[in-house]
Amino acid sequence: MIEIEKRSLIDKVKFNQFRSELRKISDESVQKRFTVVFVEREDFVPDKNATNDFKLRTINGTGELVLKQGNWHSSSERKEFTVKYDVSTFGDLLHMLVALGRKYGVTTYVNRYKYIIGDLTITIDSYDLMSDYWVEIEKVVMDGEDTTAANSEIDAFMQEYNLDFLDSKGTVDYITKMNNQEERRVLFDKVDIQKWVEERIDYINGLK
Image (cartoon, rainbow, N blue to C red; front, side, top):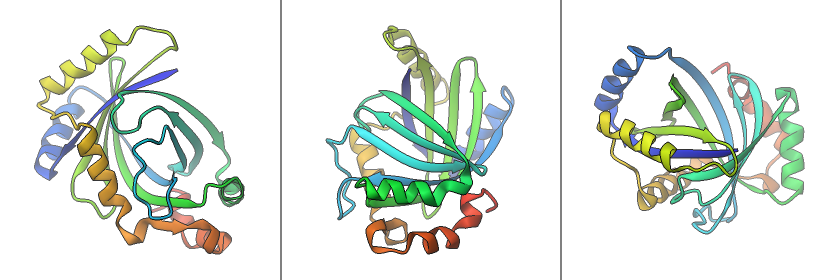
């Protein structure tokens, strides 16, 4: 399948307004998400040429291993593959990924507000250590399906709710800002992984 998504950044005032409007037309689900985003470089500078976006995450205590293929900052269309796993094996999977060369990780704790409107999925993410809110409008189409209509539908939604499109530069700048926060950075080949997992077990299990 192909995931078509476009992004925006909004402040606290816009978040409260947008959330209120969405709750009038859709049910709201709230997720606690703990994610390790694997990066290619030891200095944690985002690689703009990378095409494999690899994540180990939990959502309300349910595990997902995710690979998104495509340009992560300038393309609105990427292939996505998701494998669910028992969250009790989080540490084992982390050991495995490190052994396969995924040594550098950036961690995030997110409260996600999710809405389904027609065949669009709208999410608003509140990241730890960040003041802005990250918005994604997404539609999934099948491989080989024309994406023109889906892109137009997303564009119309963003225009209706006065959401500014976050372009490639804005995306790279935001991710760079997060990656530069020392609290997020992990060199997994230099830490005791089992201890690292134990110290974050409540976040991994969706209890915080």
